[in-house]
Length: 274
Image 1 (cartoon, rainbow, N blue to C red):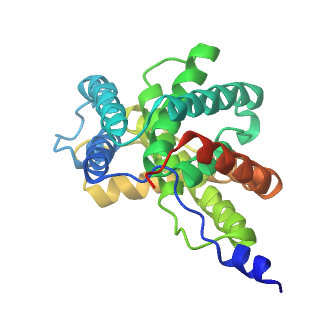
Image 2 (cartoon, rainbow, N blue to C red; image 1 turned 180 degrees about the horizontal axis):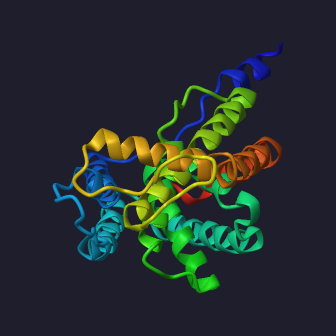
């Protein structure tokens, strides 16, 4: 192996936009609000038979948190060139989501989201997840109460890619990103199920005895058990598996070329102090 090859093999991919302490704090706050949006029915103290309504207060709060995230990242180095990259990737993701339309779980959004978060960092991946799903909803007239949940869950997918170990490179990096994409695809499906499951009444799945609906006032573990069975029987083997396979194959086939392109774009967009 030549010196040049050894140098390339030991080169560790750097994150284009490292996050500072303030941005990290805002991302933690936004994630905490997102978790509250999703998990509050499981923690709610209610009387048996009470009807649980969606938390519209949280749906209005989340966009405000996103604005704060963008403001904080602007102070940390997201200049006009990086914003241009963000806009291009968001537009591409929005178009690709329309092409797949989620048929049989086929999703063409997540692989570019994972690769973008890997190259530009956790903060960029978080914002890219939000803007991609928002732009896609505008293009497909898919704006509704479910949109904030889709945005925050996609944001976590991009942010998680940016938090993966930086020491991994080459084929091992593609393998790591593919494995992460598969896990993230299943978690995305489970969290999206959690966004509407507490408000769905009379859930009965063929082949399973008993109802799987949310029971207000029941112990947390009992409701969590019902929800996990519901997710396993309704989406894990179908939509979620289709999303995981599509994303994993896309990263394996297109990942090396797109990573190289994104890193070249990152070097031109980000100017580091000498």
